[in-house]
Length: 72
Length: 336
Image (tube, rainbow over all chains, first blue to last red; front, side, top):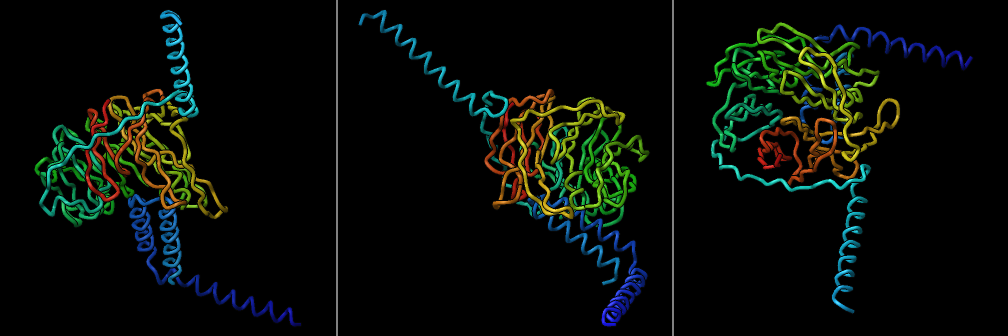
C-alpha cells in the first residue's frame, strides 16, 4: 500500500513536470532561443581563450539554451 | 711526445668531442632523431598610433593586401587597416545592420576588388572597396566565421557547426555574387555539442592556385589539401616533433583527452607555420610561443621562438603579423 502511494505520488509529480515542460516552449520563441544559442557559441569560439575555459563557456551556452527552450 | 703524435691526439680529441656533441644534439631532437634548428624571431618596433580608433578591441582575423594589413575587430564592429610596418591607416564599417555596417565581423579577406568581411551576426559577407564604401556582398545561410580569397573572384567562407544535425559542412565557396560553388568537409557531429565544437575547430591556409589547406586544431596531425573545386586531393602527415599537447576535458561520456595540435597556422610560399598550444594555468591549453616551420611534405624544418604567446598570425615574405595575448598587433621577422 505504501509502495503504491509512493508510486502514485511520483507519477503525479512527473505528470505535473511533464505538463509544465510541454507547455513551456509555447511561451518562448524558439527562434530567439536558437539565435541566442548561436550568438553564445560564436562569441565563445572567437574568444580565443584557453580551451578549458572555452569548454566551460560552451557548456553554459548549452544550459542557457535548454533553459530558454523550457521557458525557465 | 713529438709534434706528429700531439697533432694526431689533438685531431682525435676534436673528432671525439664532435661525435659526443652530435650524439647529444640527436638525443634532444625528439622522435625524428634529428636536431631542429631553433631561431629567435626579431621583433619590429611599431610606430605609435595615437588615435583611439587604432586600438584593437577584439582582433579575430587578419588579411594582407599588397600594401596593407586588415584586421577584423569583432568588438568595435570594424575592419582596421594598417600599413605593413604597423601604422594605422583607417577603418571600414561600423556597428549596425545596414549596408556597410557590421555585427561581429569575424573574418576578413583582401582581393583585387576590395575587402570581403564575414559579417557574422548579420549572416552575410560584405565587400568594401579600398575607400570603405560597400561595393558588394551576399547573404549566407549560416553564421560565417572566416573568409578567404581564393583568386578568380571566388571566396571561401568557413562555418562553425551548430551541432543540431548531421551533414553540416565547414567549408563553403562562393563567387562574388553569392552563388555557392561548392561545399566540403563534413562536420564531425556526435551527441556532445561541446566536444564537437573542439573536434571541428579548423584553421584554413589558402594555397597559391585557388586551393586550400585545412589544419585541425586538435585530434589530427594531418593537413588536408582541397583543390580549387573543393575536392580532397591529399593529406600531409606532419612531423611528430611538432607534437600533441593533451588536455583532460570532462564531457557527457566522462573525461575525454583532447589532443591539442595547433593553436594558429599560416602558410607562405609552400611553407607552413604551425603554432602548438602550450600549457597555461596548470591544466589548461593556451596559445604558444613557438611556431614550427613545416615544409610541403610535412617535415619540420625549424622552430621559430617568439617573445610572447600569439593567438593568430599571418606570414608573408619572412615577416609574421601576429596578435598577442593582449590583443596587440606585433610584427616579427621570422626568416624564410
